[in-house]
Length: 173
Image (tube, rainbow, N blue to C red):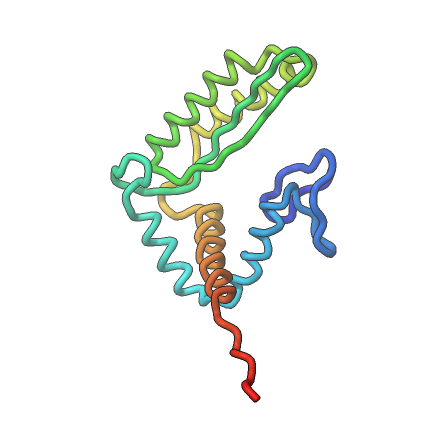
């Protein structure tokens, strides 16, 4: 099975190719482009922004940090249809635990009802939420996911700024 060159997710079918790279969807392909464009930004300015976000208040509850990237995992099934997702959230540990608990409860109630994937994926997603609630990112330093997210955010600002630059007006003869 192939892995997305941006987010690392397993690609079961399809995906998007860009040269030698393979991505799970168009969003990952565009964020990989932005990440590549952000390589021109100094590491010092990235580190300052990461530190600012990590030590800042939670964007969800406005409570004290540290703020980091947390993942929650859900599965929903109905007979032969099964849908599973993993979502990232920038928040404090408390907000992340609430979201993971909600995803765990939703999966535990609605995940089992599909055959065969609901029966297979429900224990996987429930376990992933329990592990996330029990461990999560190290609170003594920002995670690699937060650093990557900040780099992509700053890179997208740089790309947007480059796209807004006006072209030279045509010469008048």
